[in-house]
Image (cartoon, rainbow, N blue to C red):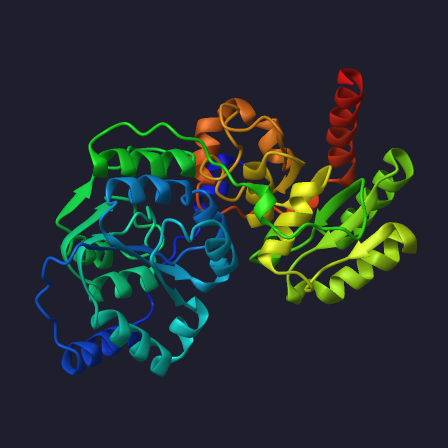
Length: 396
């Protein structure tokens, strides 16, 4: 049995290792000196994090629109969720400014031009709702020109504490974040409550009818093979076992989804399932909106713990089975039953065996897990599928 202390000590913290950003910061300060912000009924929100983070925050855009109804609202957002934002949230945002995080990290000219563009704007209010700021967020927020600036106190797991402390000084007010691990939707809710000085009671919601409808087949289950990192991807061999099982035992068609980087693996998966007329390979061929339509109209989603699982959970139509090695335990998974009851995480055996120590596990794995996702077996997932399908048949 691996001890919790060993696993906890192996959890790496992200350390600030980008002195080049200080050079960029200095260049921007010289070329584009700060203008005094004037009251102009404008608000800017910064969300440069991932798709799943955005999905767990976007419901609060409606609340902010209501509270700042006479304001011009700008969202500075990660370009990876552009499709979702334009499809779902145009009613709440007047202007979008998109950042490519990869280019921002690797291309100095891109960084300078982007920051220069940001520097030219002035706002009344700047809201930075991200709990775990990263270096991109720090640099961008330092260049936003606003009279009032608000953020949660957050944590320093993505940045060195001294760098975060320097960034903290730019804010008019930092709202205290509750200690310990909190599900991310509730974490966002806590910040908005502090910001608006009142209790907001909402649940995550997406209108799936806004997405492009998938019409290639019906009565299907979705296998989502992508993830942001290789260590978060369950093996193609395991997905193949699940695909065959769903076809043979539950007469499901199979739709394979993932990113362009997963196209080669998708072809291997398709050949391993070996049911040509039952398998639809959509990997690398869909926009986010098309993926939303596929998930919305599916019966079941078997996915790595990634944005697709959050999308399906919030749509609340397809049953979600998330294969999960322990990354961000307690923060992004499992979904509290009070929010969703169709979300079934399949945990790494080590977590299953130690679930009575859940709080300790949550802290040990809150931000990074070193558990091997492929120690989760196809048999475990099949057990969950059978339980769900049997329960569904009994309720019919």
